[in-house]
Image (cartoon, rainbow, N blue to C red; front, side):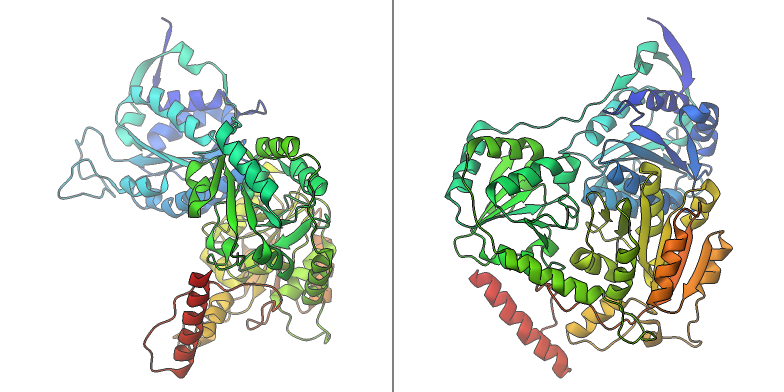
Length: 607
């Protein structure tokens, strides 16, 4: 048997560079790296030698490097991914939040944090966490709760089993998610005689699970018996490349479609059967259809509480759930009729078996909702009035192109964009599984790397911008252009509204309601400019539109700052959300909110 003598780190890099995705390109496009004593000598040396055969990018924060990798995988429909390597200790633990983002959103990313010495000779090494009762524990054990697959590499030959297992997870539509291979730093540098066959090129396919015959029969029977079905389109429609099948099936049978945050843009916003966003951040049309539905067909959705209105949305007493999902865990939720199956395969099977059966829906609901969203997005009647976030979105919408991808993650923007943004196919990217503040700028960079032709516009509030903005400098350094619109409402406006909505006093959310000696006066324009972005602050909506048009084709990141009113949100649409209100309070407002909350709980239980 022919062998090749390499260090464990060199062998890993060589193997990764030979693994192809279903499109024939490298499945792991490259690796984000911040080096420290836990990975610089082993993995760092191997990556330097690899050069363009496995490119390395340098970020400014471990968490946001991983956010960029996660956004890349999402924009690539999980057909390509990236890796991230860090040192041990704080560098590794900075990845844990990002691992949770990938885990919740079912997105592939390969995390390679350095680990302690396997030989334990220098224990305790710098930054080592010591467990007084378990010598096998390191800081990287934190990843076990937020990884789909976890392994610790303590011998160089272990990569020959660990790496294929990692790829099996990342390319499996049911198990897809983050993989963590904690790589002991001494083992990275140890050599082994690896079989040459280990490094042969391999193409990883992404399977399309076929339905079980009995499950499919039960699903079709439920569909045929339904009087008012609705399709809840989730992110699984997009990952399955089932957009065309969804449009054809809905059109052929007259079934209304509503979209989750993950599924928005699966169906063109102007399709006659697209009734818009659903749930807590949903529109009146979609929520009315769902309230009346007797069969709720979940297509690639995990039925998050924002989708279901904390399970108070579907009010029809005869309502049943039919859940189509590649993951049995998701397909079986809430007593659903389960169909463990790829979304495209399921739609094709439904179309073949239900024949010419057709349902009717109220087209007037769509028209009413379109008028409501147009009103919310219209420019302020008074040109110098402080705009709402919805009016800012309107300005972005009016300057958008077919290739525009709007993106966000936390605060006001996910709710407003889900409600009122008219998404072109593939033009919506929202991290709302974990709703992680700080995802936005790194995420925009990852999207642009996956889809260079896209016009990527990042919508971020001032609070989320302050959480994590350093990858703006990375994007400048790497020549990755996108547009960032910072809506400055001087704090956490979204949670401030929720706080007041549950009877609370404005407290510790807006900057002016927080404990301080000197009032905050953050110059976001100067800050972004100091990192190399083209930055400008605009005074009104008209000026915002001019700068948005000017930003296109600039060739580097552009940051546009606008002050907004923190108080309003789009009144139209929406749904109750279960946010527990204190049972005991000295404040009359809280007691009133509690009474309203208990009434809503009673109504949900009655459903």
